Length: 384
Image 1 (cartoon, rainbow, N blue to C red):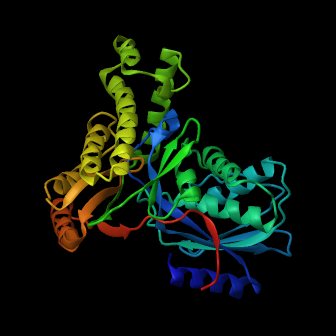
Image 2 (image 1 turned 60 degrees about the vertical axis):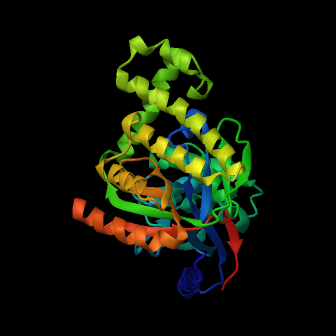
């Protein structure tokens, strides 16, 4: 956790509002494997990380609420009696959405002031949005003694994204950010919300994220298109979700849909199986097996579900041919963002230098590199 960030946010709040705030840290997340399976009631395998959002929040004596984004150098003033989604695609809708969905539970929220900043690279697939939602949800819950459970809070965060941001996300991001455990990944059944913490013993390896620094225009529409397709498939199959569908059942509608749509449905079924395989490999402390499964996952994402892009495919291909990397894949919704790489610690610096060089040569743009550790979930923190 970034102590300097905590200090900056706290100081900004105290200077601006002349009172001491409640401080919250909410982490971003990586996903080891299981992409686009969450909204299909499938399995995912995320983990909270040591990068996230720090939020300072306190009650307001005025007739409105003020929320300050230090990173964007912007603020929004809210009238809690008249909350409406803004037309612009803006961070402010995450804030408005969480407050509105908290109000929808029938809980009483007074005016508040809040300041936040983060060290999650935005648009990198590390779910800065879930971290923001969860930090505000937990902050309001504590500040106003709402008595909501963390399980209820993550559903509030998810509804905020559905109803105020317009992204039909599953529950994975909010769940991982809220419930993460240090040095563990979270095997999550998105249908039952049953979870299993699995130790990730990295031993001689470390997790290196390579951000392509591209976000193609398809990112949001492509996500919603995939969601709509999966809904179409289950309607044809008369099933509640793709979780309940076998490969044999999917084959029964093959003649009614395009080959591309069939492959997308098949990808979801295969990815669910890979998540279980990956969990078992980690329980056996077999990192090499896990790495092989990650490469298979990327192939499915790129060739079958068609959510990769030239830059991500390039990064994974380079990783695959590097003896120091045991596994890599694109991570997140797709069409840009990060790859996750498991790299030998002793060779990590060399890998990072090489990947930066070849990426720049190929695309005439820089990639960004972050090392992350697995950390605890959303929590109240002390001033440092």
